[in-house]
Length: 109
Image 1 (cartoon, rainbow, N blue to C red):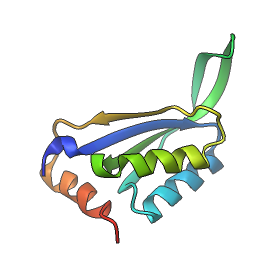
Image 2: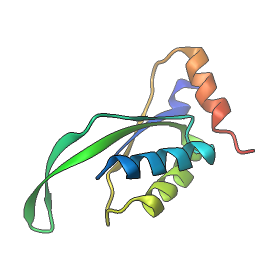
Image 3: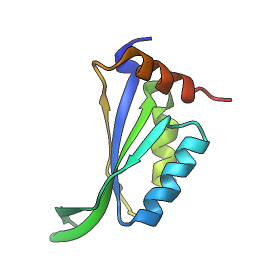
C-alpha cells in the first residue's frame, strides 16, 4: 500500500447537525474510515459578488484515492451549499498501521 493512496478530505458545513449527518453516512457507507468534526470556525469568503461572513464546522475525512469519487458525490448530495468546499490532500507520510486501517475500513463490503 502506498501512503499517497490515503487522502485527507476537507470540507466545511454550516452546523453540527449537518456535520453529524454527513460523517455518519460516509462512515456507514465505508466511503471514509474516520471523520473528525472540529470546533466551529469563522469563514470569510467571496460568494456571488459579495463578501460573506459565516460560522462553519470544519470536517477532516480520511479515505482512499479509490473511494474519493464516491465520497465527493455523497458529500455533494448531502451538503446544503450549492458549491460545497471539498478538497483532498494526499498523505505522503503516516503511521503504516493507521494508513492500513484507513485502506481496510474503506473497502466496499
